[in-house]
Amino acid sequence: MKKLRVLTGVTPSGVPHLGNYVGAIRPAIQASLNPEVESFLFLSDYHALIKCHEPDKVHASTQAVAATWLACGLDPERTTFYRQSDVPEVMELNWILTCNTAKGLMNRAHAYKAAVQDNAEKGQEDPDHGVEMGLFCYPMLMTADILLFNADKVPVGRDQIQHLEMARDIAGRFNHRYKPLFTLPEAQVDEQVETLLGLDGRKMSKSYGNTIPLFETEKKLQKAVNKIVTNLKEPGEPKQPNESPLFDIYKAFASQEETAEFTQMLAEGLAWGEAKKMLAAKINLELADKRERFAELTAQPAIIEDILQAGAEKARSQAQPLLAQVREAVGIRPLK
Ligand code: AMP
Image 1 (tube, helix red, strand yellow):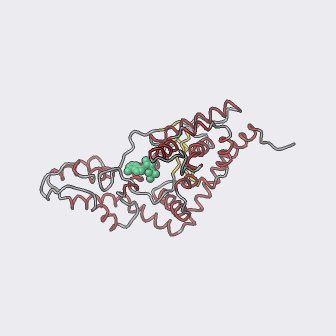
Image 2 (cartoon, rainbow, N blue to C red):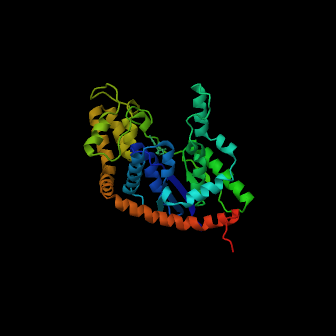
Image 3 (spheres, rainbow, N blue to C red):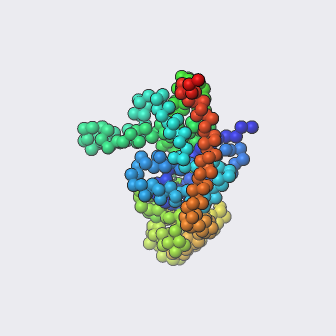
């Protein structure tokens, strides 16, 4: 039976935090173990250029994100793990698709529309003020990423559903105009994905500055956990789970029984300070080995590079036959 192809892109934008681990890395690695699935996971470094124009940051983030996924248990034997920029076929397909996509379709993309609206709200006369072509064409590149591997499913957040619809539109137009070569990909929106709360109780996010680092030292982890907001209840006073985000974070790392026990202890007056020690210990239990592996990989980036190169070779061997058909279909052929 043909395996289901699942493709996920991860933009290297800074060092991943605990929210990325719980909401993206842990479930994706778990899903990659499904024997009925053929999984592709890539570092979308060309996408990173849309928002980041600091070369050293792009480079460092790529290394940090690759090391994080590998340290968390991504198996490059089971998953085709590659860096987007190592697969030039992506760019070639990107152009061919660009020549077969209505500009109006891109005009409707959320990210571009948001930039235009922002300009209008600021009284800017030029609606495209500050908009670079990378932002405008981003759904196009995402389409090439997906179609090049004829992915069946693409796990995405709700905000990305529109881009998957665009990818289907573009694939459909190509198939109709030339030859049915592309699978119409489907968005896979996981309603179960956990949203981890940050230190202040809002969603953990770099932009809120409320994150807990994933692979800092044990001491720094405890320090970060100590900053989680609580109320002023004294030790001995009963406490409810909803009185501090620390409960939800604990839950993301504990079994059901452990969570029930923790709830009971809080109700019996566990001090917030003690609860924070328990939380840091729980997180540490899951992350200690991974942190060590992350440090090893970070100290030897050549190991990561070798893994990525091997992944690119695997990805290219999948991409090249399809791209050859695409070139043939559009009339880019040898003269004989
Ligand atoms: P970002 O760092 O916002 O680009 O997110 C990268 C991935 O991590 C996406 O799949 C997000 O849905 C996921 N993610 C980011 N923050 C959180 C959070 N606080 N809880 C759960 N998942 C998150």
